[in-house]
Length: 109
Ligand SMILES: [Zn+2]
Image 1 (cartoon, rainbow, N blue to C red):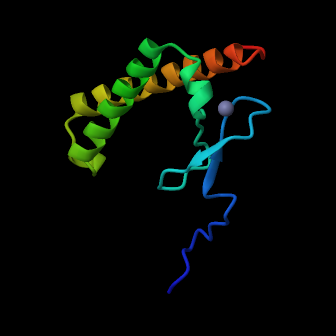
Image 2 (cartoon, rainbow, N blue to C red):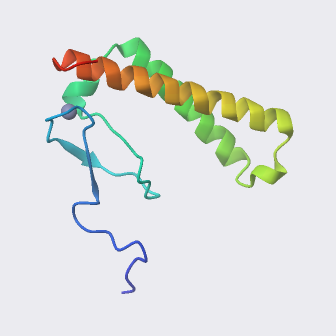
């Protein structure tokens, strides 16, 4: 069986929770992304459901647009701008979620 060029180790296959001193991990989603962050279940549940739903909806919208236009050159300009707006919104909501989780865990938000 050919080895993956990325050469995953067992440690790379799991993604650590971004709350400091939390040692829980979750399964990493592919493709491999060095900047990928996650919250473990208990820390995610400590954030507001409304914020989580907004983040999920923004991420789903980005994925839908990328699925619809796998080659960005084929997408009309307004679709690209629309997708970029949702990508920025998703990133902003993730920062809010992460800060809320760290704050709920007793750290500095
Ligand atoms: Zn955690």
